[in-house]
Each structure stands twice: as structure tokens, then as C-alpha cells.
Amino acid sequence: MKAAPRVREIPFSALGGVFDEDDIGAALGVLRRAAAPGGNFFPLPEESDFQRAFAAHEGAAHAVAVNSCGTALDLCLMALGIGPGDEVITTPLTFVCTATCVIARGAKVVFADVDPRTLCLDPHDVRRRITNRTKAILPVHFTGLAADCDAFDAIASQTGVPIIYDAAHAVGTLYRGAAVGGRGLASCYSFQSNKNMTTLGEGGAVTTDDADFAEIVRRKKTFGYVYGPTLQVATVGFNYRMTKPQCAVGITQLAKIDGVIANRLAVFQTVHELLADMPGIIRPSGIEAGHGCHLYVVRLDTDRVSVDRAAFLKTLKDDYGVSCGVHYPAVWTWDVMRGLGYSAESAACPVAAKASEQVISLPLFPHTTQEDCSYIVWGLGEAIHQAGRPARAGLS
Ligand SMILES: Cc1ncc(COP(=O)(O)O)c(C=O)c1O
Image (cartoon, rainbow, N blue to C red; front, side):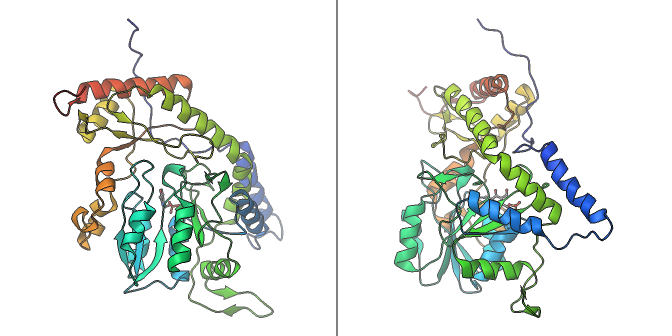
């Protein structure tokens, strides 16, 4: 019999990308130029260079760099003029801000269910929930797997409701072989620390093919400024700008992003194969070229194995040193949403409700070794064995 491996610590906290000397050099270069005589942090040639490079990488005509994906979402909803009395449809299986950006506008979140195979927003269920108050649809490219962009295009052209993608996980994601940044009216990306690329820990971008929409977002991110022979303020705006060192690092991050995603894909595929026959685990779909490979999310197969997720995660961490994440508890479980009357009952999204209690994100990063992949899968098997028992007689 093979000996059990020595217990090791596998944290869920590594950088999602690769941050190295190129990035440090780019940031230092900006700082040194700003410190030199006559230097300044303005103007920002790095901003337009980064925006051009990012738009090209994500297949969009325009990119507007901002300070987070959360603010990118805010800007898009503000640009659409969404407000009280309006409804916005989104998935319950997402980070809280995909929904709270709607609340912040005074509008109502309408949840639609997810596709049981991909866990992305289900366009068929979205159609059922559209009313004459629906002002936007916010699908998420969940984990880096593209949402069904063609189906959402069809909804937009038949109903006139714009699609704004939450592309926080989707740097490098492809849909039918093409980057997704130009799909829908706009897409909102994140460069926060554990995403596939990062602009010094925080950052985001709005991408779009629509020049007018890009211009509204651009104005709103800088106080509503309209630049010209004389500066004008045309609309209510904010300061949601990305800093110059961040933009410089965005350029060096982008130069290596394809390699980072290829590494992540290799790690995901290794684990995917190792998990092929593991009882009690449902593997994610779409782990192939084109997946952004931000998160590898398995589900506990609670129809076959009765296992409490919290106890299982505790065993995995305490006994085997493997820390996992949960992406995501359904949005209606957060106090802020409950306080506003949102609930599993009112949302009526049974697939998302069930998945949200089953999902587990494995600690896989671009530098995860083959040995650590095997170890994580071994720990998972042991913890299932310890914490689980057949859910119904006759099932193993
Ligand atoms: C799906 C999703 N949307 C939005 C965000 C917010 O991104 P940021 O931290 O850049 O505001 C996140 C962050 O993790 C996310 O996972």
C-alpha cells in the first residue's frame, strides 16, 4: 500500500498571476520619472497605452481603466441611467458587488437561475424574468468560463435590454474561440490581487465596442470632465481612475497573461484528470483552452454523499492543511440583501441555491506543482471519506 504523503500547508491566498521583476521595474520607472526634476504623475501616457493593449487583448474596440471591477460595474449602471423603479437581472452565484451595485442605484435586483452544467447565468431563465422595468442584464463569466454570449445577444436584440458582463474572472476568457471583451454593451474586468493579472493589488477596466458608451464611462470616471480647448464638466462624475504606476504594471502584466493562463490551465487539467473517478465530487465543465482558468470550482455531490460542507472544509484544512474557498454563497445569504427582503424563497433559483451549498474552490495557482496537485486531490479524497457517508441506501 502506498504511504500517505506528509501533511503540508496549501493556502488559498497566493497571487493569481505572476508578479515579477518586469512589473517591479515598470512601477519603479514611473516613480523615478515622477521624482526627477520636472516630473509628475500627470499626464498619463501609460493609461492610454494600457487601455489600448487591454482592449486589443480582450477583443474590444475600447477599454477604460478604472480602480476596480466594482467601480467599473457602478460606472456602467450609472452610464445607463439606472435608478429607482428599474430592475436588473443577475445571477445569485456571484460576488456580492454584482448585486449591490444595483442596490446602490436604488434599483431592484432580480435573480435568475444558473445553468446546472456551467453555473453561469441561464439565458432561458433570464427571458422568463424580463419585465418592462428590466433595464440591464448582468451575466458573470463565472470562474473564467464564458457565459452564453450568443444567447444573451439574442435577448438584447429582441428586447432592447443591454447586457453588461461581469468579467471579473474573465481576463483571457474566450467564447467560441474569440475574446469576450466586446460582447454585450460592455464588460467589467478586475485586476485585484488574486485575479489572473493584477495592477498592484487593485484595478479594473470597462471594455466596449460602443464608442459613445466608452465616452460616457470615461467622463464619469473623471469628475464628468470633457476635455477640449476649455475644460467642461458635462455630467456627474467621480474619481475612479487607475494610478499611473498601476497602468504601467498593467502593461507588463498583460505581456505575460497568456503564459499565466496556460500555466493555470495545465494545473487545472492535472487536477481535473486526478479527480475523474472521485466519488462525491462533481467536476467543473469547460476546463479546456478558452477557459480563463481563474477558479477551479468543484461541487460536493450531495445527492450521493451526505457531507456537511463546513465540516468537510474544516477537516480538509485542519487535518490535511488544504485551504479552499467558497465561490459563492448565494448573494441573498448576505445580511445586506436579507435586510432588503431578498431570500432563497423570493429568488426562486433552485439550481443556484443548491450549487451555492455545494461549491468549493480548490487552491490552484499558476505555480502549483504537480506534487501539490496530487496532494490536494489526495486530501480531498481523504476528507470526503472521513466526513461523508452515502446519502441514500444503495448508493456508494
Ligand atoms: C464576480 C466578481 N465581480 C466583481 C468583483 C469585484 O472586483 P474588484 O475587487 O476588482 O472590485 C469580484 C471580486 O472578486 C468578483 O469575483
